[in-house]
Image (tube, rainbow, N blue to C red; front, side, top):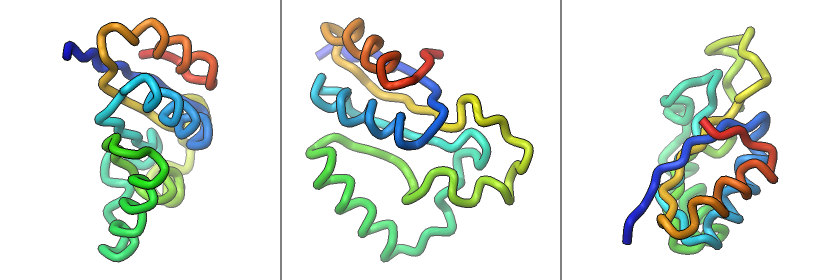
Length: 116
């Protein structure tokens, strides 16, 4: 199946999670959320037990879709960049089947996201 990687930015984690739930219904996968303020390693302080619990919760919420994220994406953002802009606080990437790309773009926009 031919997949396209879409990239989008959201003002909040809640908006990004709403998009992920809808994109999962379009058979999207390999979701990755990053906090723009904290960078890619924002979840590195989570304990192994917390990471496992978060993984189980994600599997229950998103089914078989793969999701990479920390418990709270912006939780420790202030220690990384206190002046971080609210705009584009969360960056999301997802692989979407070719036949669903246009619908996925509408989902992203409808949930408050901006396509990269």
